[in-house]
Length: 302
Image (cartoon, rainbow, N blue to C red):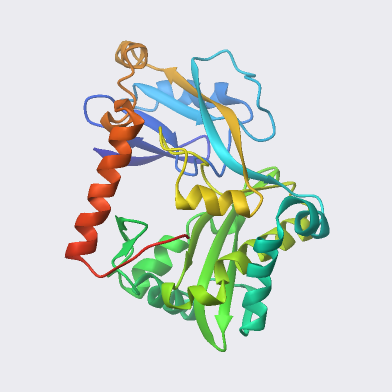
C-alpha cells in the first residue's frame, strides 16, 4: 500500500502493508528543523502510521534529536568556489573529462521545465531500457507523464541541460532544501551514445557553478553507499568528481506499538538489506546479466 498525505504543509509518503512507514515525499532533499509538530499531527492525522523516518540535514553529523536512530549517508561535495573544486577537489583526469565536453561542442545551460525540455528528456530516457544493470523505470513513458513527474518540487528545482547543437543529450535536476544549505541531484541522465563527449562530467561542473552562484554550500548526489554495497561504478564516478561519503543520523520514530516492535526487530528494512554484501553483489550481477540478455541495454554512470 502506498499513499500520499499532506501534514504541516508537507507531503508525506506512507508505504507498507504490514508495517506502515512514513517519510517526507522529498526525503533526502527537504528536511525537518523541528520535528515535534509534525509528529504530533501524524499521530492524529487519521492514517495509520507505525514509523516515521527522517534524516538530519547537512552539515550536522552528530545526533541532535532524542529519537531512535540509525546511520544513513549522502554523497556530499562541500562547495566554496569553482576554482577550489577545479584545482583541489578533483584530479587531472576528471578535469580533462570536463574539458572534453566543451571540445566536442557540448554546451551547458540552465533551462525551464516546459514541453520542449520534456520532449528532450523523453528522448534521453527512451534511448535504452536498461541502465546500470537495472530496468529504466522511465523508459516508455509519454511526454506528458514525464513532464508531470519532473514538475515535482518545482519551486525549489533547478534544471541543467547538456546540448549538442539543439539536441538535449543529458540533463540534471537539482532540488535545494528550505534553507539552501544543500542542492541534491534528483535526476541525472545522459545519452549513452554520447558518452565519449563526457556530458556527465560537464553537468557536474555546471552544478558546482550553480551552487557557487546561489551561495549553496553543499552539492549532494543521493547516497554514496546503498545498503551494504559501498563500491560500484556509480560511487567511483561520484568520488572522481569530488563527492565524499558523509554519515548522517536517520531517525525512526515509532508512532504505534507495532512501530516500536518493528524497529527493535529490524523489520523496517527491506529483506535484501539483511543479506550479506557478497550475496547482494552476486544478485545484482545476475539481475544485470538477465537484463542484458532480455532487453537492449547500456551500462555505466550516470
